[in-house]
Image (cartoon, rainbow, N blue to C red; front, top):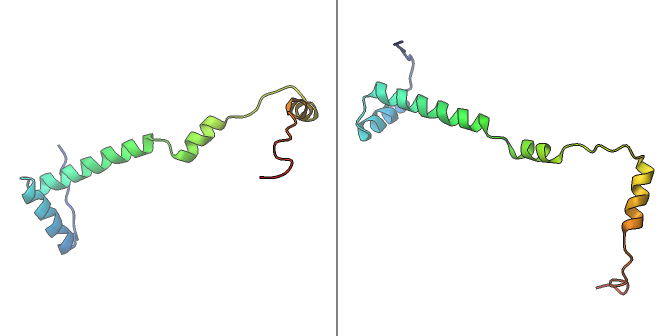
Length: 90
């Protein structure tokens, strides 16, 4: 098993880790190892999760059709129904 030495840790950070370790019945080394493992697990999960933008892009896809644009527009317009409901406004 490898050893890791961390130098130049700010006193405030070290004290915070020391308090956490004490509250969770761990040594400072065990606490740091726990925090690193926890961070890496969360990071792995977050990178595996798609962003909302990526989900939207996956859903949108692309249009595949052999028809010309003018023909598609004519089909859409001919499928519309005329309605007189809003002729006088709201």
